Length: 241
Image (cartoon, rainbow, N blue to C red; front, top):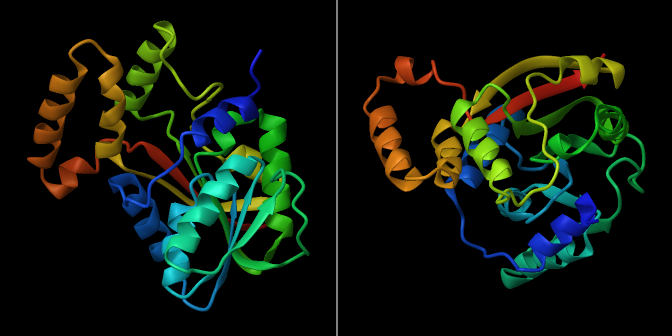
């Protein structure tokens, strides 16, 4: 039986491209807003995957550390950094036990990571993210939003038809109770990326047509009306209790 690590090793074995995508832009803009700019700051990405967003932040003057338990993921990320001669530190480790000193980073963050862990593992991961973050620094985690209907529907159909590629994935309704157990206070929580959630509709019969029509519908709404629809990623911004 494949473990979660086996699944991600298989995904990262396909390689990654330097191409920037809409979801990366959403996450990047969110991090820029929360950090008030990354230039001169040290950031740890705990569960770095492609490393694409950390690379972008490094080009903006941040010092970045990428941690992942998949050697294939780290090699892919190193390849992206080397293509443009950009410096970064790469650490092969479980994010629940990172070989880093206490209070190393101004910001420790991840996206699309905690939803693959049990609740007790989420607590351990957040405790470790807190440990390596400076007092007064931020811990930021972005996870699939349990309140986002298009994502939930697409995921459900994909699982029912055996087409879901990401293994165990439990969407998050709020990190508040988990964060408290880890000694962190969620200072704000909101969602981003409704349009990105529509990508999951491709798992439905006729999903491409439905996706296109929903994009058109959403883009024709006012900004205020668009805010009524929960986005794909739940953003949890945390500090030490």
